[in-house]
Image 1 (cartoon, one colour):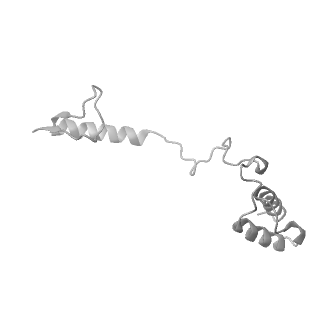
Image 2: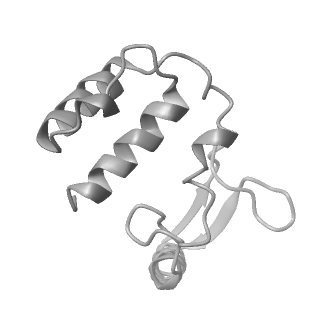
Image 3: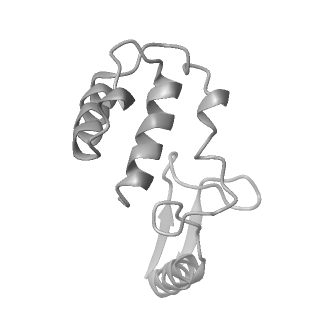
Length: 113
């Protein structure tokens, strides 16, 4: 059985054409090989395997928005941690995002979280 694939939106062949000809068996075999090759590739997934050399954790002093007021989530979390650590002075309403982050990290270390 011969067929021609004339999809305009499909991947182009090496010669630049978007048409494909051949037998159904040849096409099926090519697809099976291509799919197997794709599964053999090891793509890095930063969520599954975070890179310790990554820049995803910046120093709060280097944050572009670090001078902005702390977020509602930071406010709530910092208040909770300061209460758990029996350190009310660690909480203040007027902190920046960067300062709140530093205090949260310090309280988590103190509480061994």
